[in-house]
Image 1 (cartoon, one colour):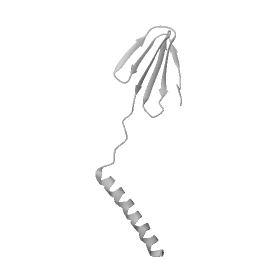
Image 2 (cartoon, one colour):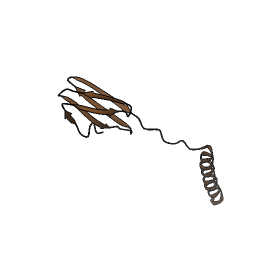
Image 3 (cartoon, rainbow, N blue to C red):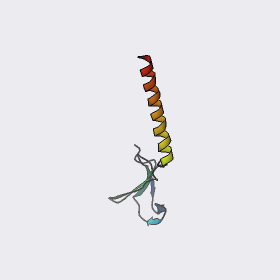
Image 4 (cartoon, rainbow, N blue to C red):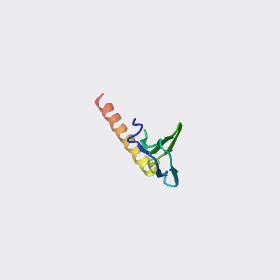
Length: 92
């Protein structure tokens, strides 16, 4: 797990946070870093004179299989199981 790739220290800094909110810091000692999340998404970390904040924007969830896909998968496992059962019964 990476906490931060790079830090940027600046006396004046403007950035977009989570694509909609923007902020401006006009101090020395402001640090900003883009973090890498464990399961994906975009994390933002910052600190300014003892105040630390963290924001996280998760990525969208993966697709859920359609019912037809589930039916084909279950049918395939059923046919494979019945084939194995027939082979065992024929060799006994």
